[in-house]
Image (cartoon, rainbow, N blue to C red; front, side, top):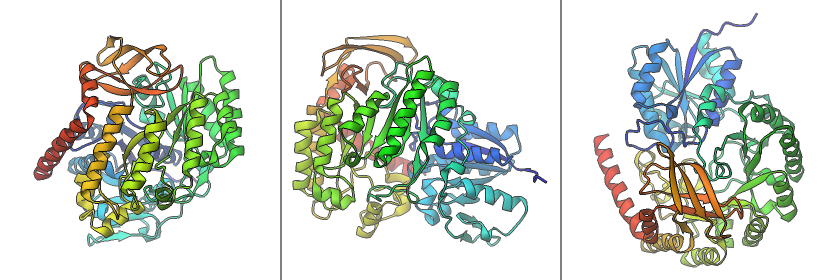
Length: 545
């Protein structure tokens, strides 16, 4: 006899991106939260009464929106999660739930707790935490609570015992067969609403259509390479193309999807699998009456001219590469399984094939020196044509470079770092051989290179379509072709700047206002002022908190 599922569960999607300021407006420019979509699908499959509140889709403070939702129904549990960069918003969520009169229990998951379980659990104090992949764990946890069984046997959870002592159970093994999981619950997360509010300039993979309708899909989990700046949970496991298409075909037809974004960092390793996907997408494109394109992530060491041609013929328009450095010494230190020669070859071949490209060089590895940084920057100046971004390595919790920063005293307080210092704009000196002064000089040079070598184009015309949405007429600075881009989101019509891809030559450039163009011309100085403002802001927020 099937067991009765009495628990009522609310899943909350945190606001993305999030900082320490109060954000009270709906914002649809965020990466769709796969993890919570899978958790919702699993819970619904198990028969639990499950609702979702997507904070990104509504105006109002976090506390107001949560209180309103909790007033509607007596929930037993509230669940959420994310990465360490949204510590503040998760803290607000937990505090709001705990203060509500219905007193539901809070379950926290995601990289924020998995990468620093003891530290984050003691700091945020959820009622329960799920460490690692959560689909199997959450079901066992709820079943245990429903039947009032001993929780000691539930792997992968953290909780407080009757004496308020933190208990961390044994680690759970990763899910071996991903095809046992139900497909993610996109409907529950208001996916159609997300699609209707998508804009041409939201992300690098939305720029090929004025009205993009993107379907993100996971092709794998984990990674076999273990690069020092990454944090992955578990070994590499991949879904079959048959299983991927089983999810993809009905979704494309149901939502009228025109862009597929495949998340699978090691997709190019298995050539047979890659070619099979190209074949299946070709078939799918013939079954629908609208244009369908796709984008993906590839490792540069496993791609060649023939692979790129096959991908382009099947409708692939953009590839995201992890280049990282042109120094063999730095690549080896990063444990990156590519060579400078492979990067050079595949970069130039991708341009020849007229395919869009997303990639980064990240500076500041442990073995980085003035000489290794110069190797990368010299190649970038000569070859990149502004198509590859420049930045610094970020020590994300759980990564080897993060542990290096702890050992060296670069990060002195783990909790303080996660709460107030972790940011894509922070440029730490994690090297063994460069001084802080040399790092500061390198940062200034990188910003100067971006200002000099990237293309910043002022539009020929700008026409308002509706509030904060405009149509731009622009001449491509590379091929000279006139381009019209409709449905572009602009917060301030006098000060804006965003990346765009030419739909003829597939080269990327910035569309900027006059004010922003001047700002980019003096980019190092502007960034210095912004960094100073950010430090002041974080100081006062810290005092307030």
